[in-house]
Image (cartoon, rainbow, N blue to C red; front, side, top):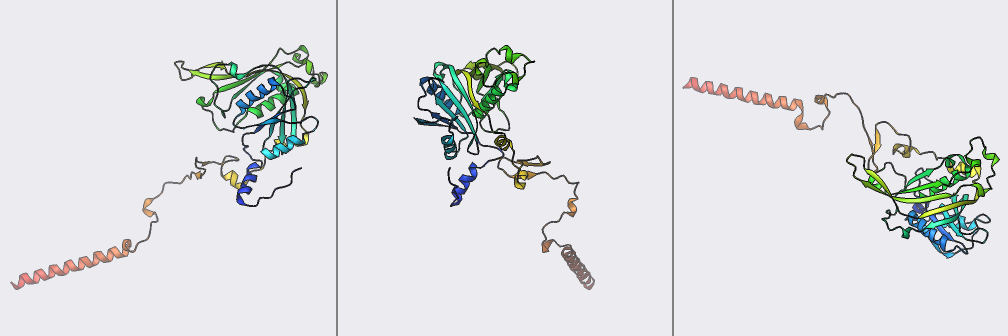
Amino acid sequence: MLRTVKPKNARSKRALQARESKEIEDPRTAIFVKGTHAGEKVNGVMKDLMALKRPNAISFSKKNVVRPFEDASSLEFWAQKNDASLFVVGQSTKKRPDGMIFVRTFDNKVLDMCEVGVEKWIPMNDFKTAKSTPGHKPLMHFASELFDSHPRFQQLKSVLLDFFNGEVIDGIHLAGLEHVISVTLSPTPETLNNATTTLSGVSSESTTILPKVHIRTYTIRLLSSGTRIPRVELVPMGPALDLALRRHADADPEMLKQALKRPKLKKQDVEKGLGKKRKNMEVDEMGDLRGRIHLEKQDLGRLQTRKMKGLKKGREEDLDGESGDESNEEMAGKRKRMRAE
């Protein structure tokens, strides 16, 4: 277990605060770990998945003796050391060939795990088409009712969404949509497709009857259609994967409750607009809080301005009086001179 690190200066304090839980989380970092024997197929699949995950991906080049379902202490150590919450462990054995384990963590502790076997793989380099820009969020497409009803596929859907999800954005621009990740299933067996069959009647451990998972990746082409809405075409980009579900580990209910808990916002965060939206208040692009005030029609004649001695009302009257007296004296002097003549 790692010791608690206390910050010694402002820089280390900011680094620790950046790792704390936030209301709007940063993009999740995934670590790709090779087991004692991964195999050429698993190494190629992990390489292609890392290309889709970049720049939030870390690859361990050396082989590691790691067995997540037996001992997850190594993963928890790496999660805290690298500030990562996702792992992809590649391991190929005689009993479970070409296997990959997706691991999610919360608070540097393993939350849940899902193991899949690679049945078929077409690498990304075999598709001689344009590739998407690293760092762009993909469109996720899940085409099956089992992703909303069966617990195993619900877990897989949640893991894939966390894995490929990037930064939290407020809006979508068409030019930023570059690729689509489509996840479909093989024909569903009657035991799972029958609406009258309950999930308790089908053992969650019997993975032989579960349909295969097909993952396909496409680039999006926006072509002119003569209207404001462009015509959309999907071009295969790769990789193409056929996966089979194997072992899994469900999340602890208490830990899952803590992971889904939303922290209370501070007063200053609410004022900045991160919490409940306040009327007539918004945060501009520079991060400044701006408000709009509605007032009645004002009389500008009564508007208080800067006080100056030269603009006082009594001063103006005195000047007008003095000038008036001087003009009267001049007129009287002219009349006297005219009479004397």
